[in-house]
Image (cartoon, rainbow, N blue to C red; front, side):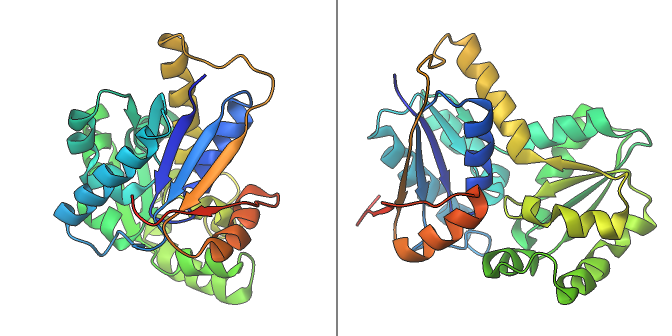
Amino acid sequence: MSPIGVFDSGVGGLTVVKELVRLLPAEDIVYFGDTARVPYGIKSKETVIRFSVENTLFLLKHNVKLVCVACNTVSSCALPKIKNSFRVPIVGVISPGAREAVYATKNNRVGVIGTKGTIKSKAYEHEIKKLDPKVKVTAVACPLFVPFVEEGWLNQDVVLTVAKHYLKPLKEAKVDTVILGCTHYPLLKNVIKKVLGENINLIDSAKQVAIEVKKILSDEEILNSRRCGRSQFFVSDNPEWFEELAGRFLGKPVKNVRKVSSV
């Protein structure tokens, strides 16, 4: 049976892989991290689209049956283009997270945190307003969260201090639901809850993406029924760095990451 393809600009998309493995343990997964060209958030829209097309073509060489775009930047500015360019089902991270947030909020006040590129795109606001115009959205960029996660700084005092600064507008807006609009951010759930309170609804887009993927594969009748799937990992640069971080994201060692010379 063909695998699920997942791509991201780097390692953050592994939070999506973790949820796919948890929800669909029989599925094979091919992951591509474009580590030579990360970060995507500072690139032009045209460049992000070009990279996304190249990444999708790479996954299609592995005969994937579905492509999961595990990158908020790509999902916010390139998804319509790549959806129209390929026949294989393509799932982004914006719509599933927005839908769950609209469903979860009780006071119609939703917060969104993400990289500068994702927040600037207003992709989550547009998606939420399409679903329910009454929902008030407060969006905040949290650029230091990504390097904190990649350094393994998840609970240090400096992380809490920065989180209090970033999340202050969300507290002031009295949001009851927050979308983690970057695939790195689920690793900082504990700190975010310390700042916003234990009762805050944190919407992990990775979980919602996995649910959507399962539904599509089930509807198309292409779910894998094998007992145990396997994952393959490819990067465009620095496989050693990727392996080290991948273990942190997935909670288990990752070996045999392969570097590809071109995508």
